[in-house]
Figure 1 (cartoon, each protein chain N blue to C red):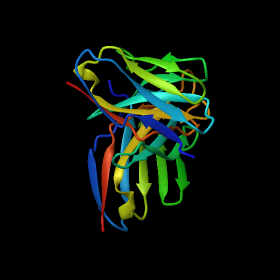
Figure 2: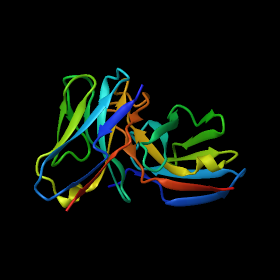
Figure 3: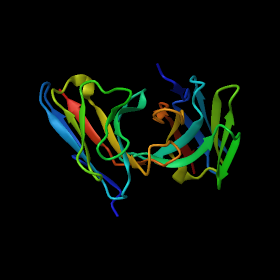
Figure 4: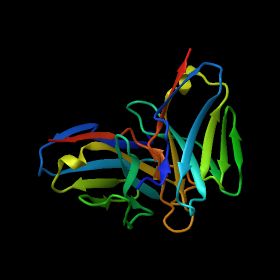
Length: 114
Length: 113
């Protein structure tokens, strides 16, 4: 039981390049989330998927797209990376969207955009 | 605008003593509060939560206190252990609507053996 896995762990991009961050969970959770963590800002929600087939914007969605590929997988795409997107990205999942359901986090992807 | 604030970036405590981590929030719609713990190179892990219908919730060495009138909550760890050294994030949500979590900026706790 791996929980929430993220790939890659580290990535360096040049401005304007694109990439997709992958996330998978094996807990049969309905809801999945993407957060970014920046120094002095805490974690901020980028996008979430309350259930398979649905996605919604969070607090900071600009510059990102997401795909809920199936119940297990939720990917985050940067179409044209910018230095402001340098951050640590965390994927999380939970049984349901209610905040009383514990969110389980992956180990994170550290992205640097030069 | 930060809706959840942790004004102390760091805290050092001797092993065996009490650690008190504080959190303030501005959104009066928040009615569910959580604490997450994060070790380096790992994702956050859930620690303890409290609903706004309570003013205290206890789980072993960890107790969270909520003061709704002051829009303030605190996490008490007694006794503190070296393994508690981590970054602690406070989070809040409104259970109506999207239920999204809003996180504070974190407090780095160091427990000195």
